[in-house]
Amino acid sequence: MPMIPERRAGVLKVNIARQRFFRAVRRTIILLRAGGVLKSVKFDSESSEERFSMLLRQKSELTEKMKSSTVELFNPALYKVGNTLNIHSSVRRYLRLPHSLRKSQSLLETSARAIGIFAPISSFNTEIQLEICKCAFLEHFNTGRVLCKENNRAENYYIILQGKTARLLNGDRLQVTGSVTAGQCIGADDDSLRLNLPRKETVFVQEALDVLTLSRADYMRIFHRKQEISQIQDFLKTIKCLKAFPTERLLDKHVSGTFFRKERLISDSMEMPRNIHFVESGLAKIVKKVVKNVFILVRELRSGEFYIPSGENTNEFLISCGCQVLSIKENDFRKFSNAEVDARLLLASEMLPKIPSFSAKSQINRQRRWSNLRRKIVHDTVQLSRSRTFC
Image 1 (tube, helix red, strand yellow):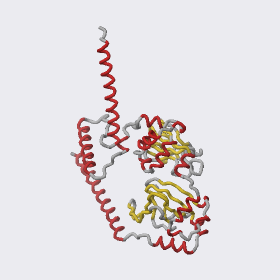
Image 2 (cartoon, rainbow, N blue to C red):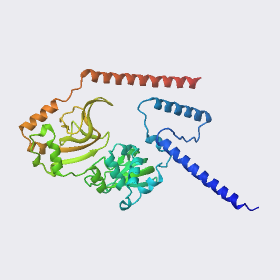
Image 3 (spheres, one colour):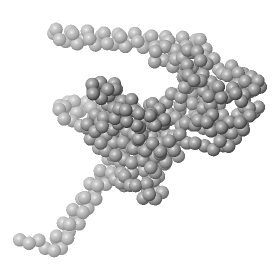
Image 4 (cartoon, rainbow, N blue to C red):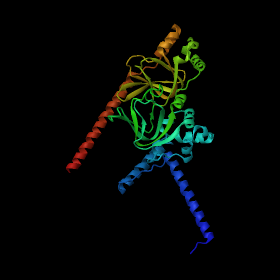
């Protein structure tokens, strides 16, 4: 029996409304995952009891997060579910367009916010995030794809959003030396990309990979921006210790500027050749290693402050908290320096706060207590499992 035209139109409207509803539900789920409120879990082989305990644990964790004052609004670990990178389709299309077609300012800002929740990009400032969205390409690679070959010149810089890669030291012998996972980058660990040198290892895709790819030219333009020497000279004149320093004698070859993202090592006390590092913008920190995996803060460096490696094994490290650093080789600096500048630098370096002995001792005692407690927990767990086995 044929359907009445009015009824057919009504069914069509209902179907369209259902499609819109489910589409809205999917978008809402994605936003909830982005905010860490909802975490989807795959139950392939778990029993109903395990599912129930998992849900209860998730509920208790969410309650604790909501009670705390520092709640993570966007947690990338909860945002990525399965093998699909959950970003909006408009952002995905925008990041796959050629550079000349990326003219929409609103889409540019939306893309920067969408990819800004992922670990490697969240450590960059807003200006660099926008620059990445202007020129980076979003690419997907399947398992087994070779990204970089050993002894080939570095051409691209990869920011891993999701997936896993493996490194091979000798491609013929297949000696896996390590892996690079989501939240890390390929190309910035060594100087092969910056100096255009052959790569020392082969990198291939171990799990399905979603990356943002930057060409070498774009990488150098964004992360190793060459400023005008006049701007650098004006900045150095604002530093109190360098008032008597002849900054007009500095040339481009004497100064190098680099942006370091969060938790990146800038220098240490044994750096060779020694450089004087000036923080141009952002924040860096000097930490001292007390015992294994125990570091205490010595000092924070802000804009206009500097760090000079001592040349001795003092276990001091200069760590970035997201900063732009100007580095001058100490030999070049001493050529143009004079007695007044040297005295001012020495006085400023000696005024650095020293680590009190009681603070170091408390850190060591805390580490020992934690080691003893961990050893006791492992021992009790083993004894309990053995007793259950014999019963």
